[in-house]
Length: 493
Ligand SMILES: *[C@@H]1O[C@H](CO)[C@@H](O)[C@H](O)[C@H]1NC(C)=O
Image (cartoon, rainbow, N blue to C red; front, side, top):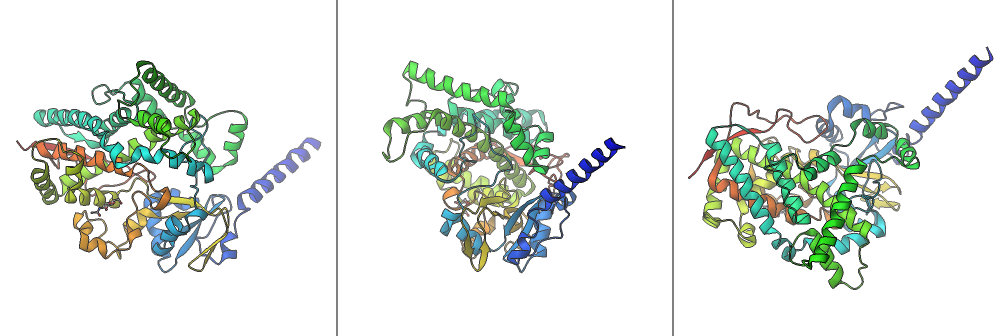
């Protein structure tokens, strides 16, 4: 009897505590006078995400709150203010940037990934960003193009083999192996050759970091406190062995270079970071610590691999499904580059290819929801945003707004001709975010995409095949085509 009372009381108390914990923030939006979907005590509004999937839900809410500048969203117990108004988004990204410097993470990164540009906050972020920025300048990126050229040619060779045997190609894997090889060479001067040997250690470990244990991530998503517990117990979330593999690899690369006195000759990320250190171009910028170098190198892999491969595979697929666009792109390539591999300046003149890539990133933006954290009470366009509030710009929904982009599901690169572009709000296209915290690798990513597209389109034409499923159906939670991106290639000459 006594035990029963104890068990009963404990149960009631814990359910009560859980209820209190989960609902602690509910009411925040009401106080601010901001509308939001009806909540459940446990999920907040997250139940809707499971019901509709990320992409449909974003569009659904965007439509439902059409006349609102902002609306509320309880991501489990965490209030997130969704910024629909493009003028407000602009102020958050640019004018009021100092009050919105940080980015929202579901969980904090562990060492050796801790000090990375994606998750750093405040002044620490500013310092590292300033130190790393010169590495991504036009002149430095130019020097990386040899690495892109070598890997583009391997990709072309593989595609030609498929073309000769009449094999249909699923673009995602083949593009992802290409992107990984480019990362390994532009990042670390390594020729890992995933395109020929997909099972090399670098590729296996990188894919492991990209696909962390889904069960643990889900648990943390439901109960952020789980992460605090894991950290206290010293248990990392991302594959620790993989992260350590990369940290050691970077150390090894740096040591080898020093020993062989090859520093400054390889023109990759490690080289440029080390050189930036030595030259110390801006004396006000402190040197990076080894831990910061590890963090950036890992971020370089993680941020530059899935994103580029997604955009490349979607763009090739859209071109296959829209032969008149593909033909126009090929004419531009022929006129500007002929048969040879394009140099940096020729790439800059490829306007139509640029429009095709932008249209592909409009339809399928890897960064489909862009967040910041408000670090000081701020009022923007009459909307009060309290300190610590997470704000999010619904990039995917904006990119699919029929008032901004008529017939939003249609692939139409002409949306990005100068006339159409000038008629739109500058925040209507946000594939790389905007302002001081926009994607640091944008120029490199675009250069890589254009160079490889030229290489392919010079020789091959992507066309639909029996496995192609178009329109594309996105998976519910990730920016992936549920049925793959299947095409065939035809030889041009
Ligand atoms: C394509 O997008 C990039 C990145 O947002 C931008 O810099 C460029 O001007 C865009 N090009 C066109 C033609 O819209």
